Image (cartoon, rainbow, N blue to C red; front, side, top):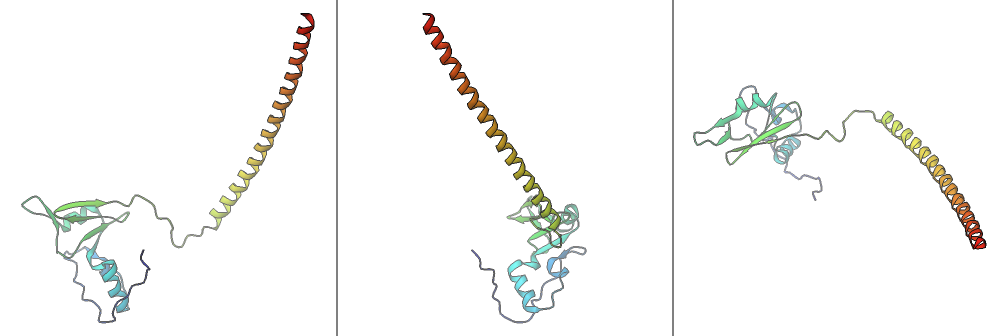
Length: 170
């Protein structure tokens, strides 16, 4: 398990190459990070210079995907390893000449800046209603069990009376 701490050496900002194609940006080119140590750490650990950004899948493939004569594919420019595109941040990559697509189907677990107090209050009210409903159902179950017991006792009493009457007739 990673400890979440990155150790790097302080030094000059890495010289990150520009995007190989006009109109396609890299993550490193769109972020404005003033601290050189932070920038270098992100380039080292998050590979900001190897992730391209595009508006659509089609646009990214048209701009960056190269089909070789042997039928295999590659990403133009050499340094780009992943190409992310809108609307969900899906991406494609090429490894050993084969393109693979990774889709982000799950929604984010948490959205920054959303006030969840109303949702929490709704859930708490629903929980209270469910507790009250459970209590009512338990009372109803107890009544039904009592009625069942009463009918069973009455049945046994009547059955004994029938048995005694039948015995007396014989």
